[in-house]
Length: 369
Image (cartoon, rainbow, N blue to C red; front, side, top):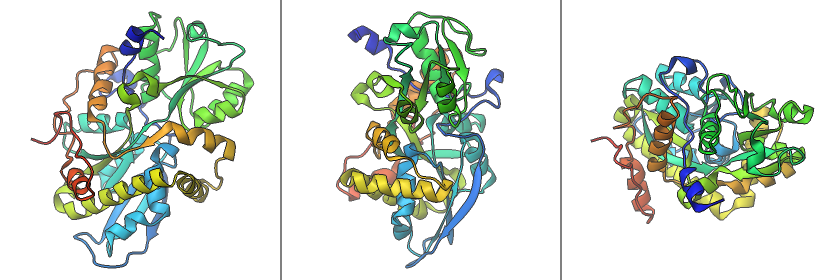
């Protein structure tokens, strides 16, 4: 791919906020569409912080492995001491944002699209992004018998998870950069964009009803296990091959009233990421064990071994890439220019990083003034 093309392809994945055509269509990088409210309480030991309990939300996804592993290994609870951890899983970003707004959870791991959507729709009153968790883990996987080059995608049927979700917007932007035309709402044009729930995308691929999919992990690796070929890794389109895929958000009310608890969760996140990166095989097994507990079935070795290396577990929320995601969504006509000032508060994270001897991270000018 020419360097100029690669430069123009550096885009974000962003779910549209506040446009009628996308109302009800927004989802994060999840593998389902409804919340799963099976709450788990972890016993607390030690000195209690300012809150008796902290309620944590996340998805049973590999892109949320920091939460999976931190919960499974008891790392979060160790940092919380006598404050009890309650965890709840969700299968869609809007459900988690709704729970945060309702006070059902205090802190959540969530994708960039619902983070910005939630912040924008509340006019900046409901949440803050306080940390990062993961980058990458998104791929274009195709049927190699039908699509051999990127140009071959034209005229084919490509699935994305949902109208306006992060992968959907990324694919629409990529198509536009190729000079092809697609109606963003209907998905019709030079490429047929078929919005398909990630849970059924592998079956759609096996049946031949789609020719490929722009999807997150582990869906991408499930397609590969069915004979699909990775034609493009989204990370290759970004500077340093990094873009935010999972944020840590917190209710502004909880952050104001219990900053010590938020800091403890962030210490747990930073320590979990360090453990994941130092012990990849153990971490992979831990995440899969948690997935088995949550869903009743672990990922197969072939799938998780393929998916795991494409996800980077990092503490930096990559704020500049979040802004880029919003900018590209605006360019695509899927979003009115959002005001993201104040969406970040990285004070606690940078305190934790400094104490751990790690460099501080930037809010790209989008922090609390």
